[in-house]
Length: 115
Length: 112
Image (cartoon, rainbow over all chains, first blue to last red; front, side, top):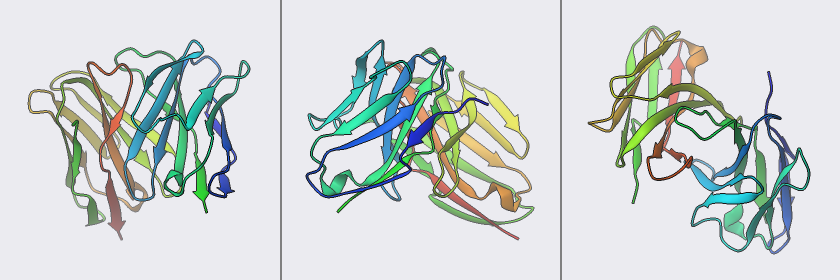
């Protein structure tokens, strides 16, 4: 069964450093998303991406964050200057469309720890 | 502020028992999702509910949706240990494109 893959599974970084989280969405999917989950809390929407541009973004997704689809398969989330509060599990997701009933398929996540 | 609230937050139940998890939301929505998350793992889609009165069942889990009450339920029948996980509901407001708003999660532990 096709799946969303994310790398790395764990990332440890120093505060102020840049990190890039990588995702390979399901191949025939057109919509891509990043969500995050701070330990013990709910899953929060960050951004959605379609046709090489951001469709929607939340208040969390400030100027420190950016997304890119550098080639036909990868979808990346960059955090320019990490803060302690960026420590979370980051989930990439993709969907075939965005109509009613479309399911989001989630990757296994990247656990980001900012020290 | 949009709210998606689940209760209970924590649920410990014995094998063989029945229980219901509730998901209340504060927005107009035409779809509600239930996801399961095992510790350290990703979110697995369980159900998609698209209309008022929708009911879906898979194994020991049954989900329903009442859009007028803005309430969804996830009913567990004759629980088994394998159902131990955290369960999230998620709604998509009509005005929010495809932005999922997740509930607080219900951590279910089934005790033998």
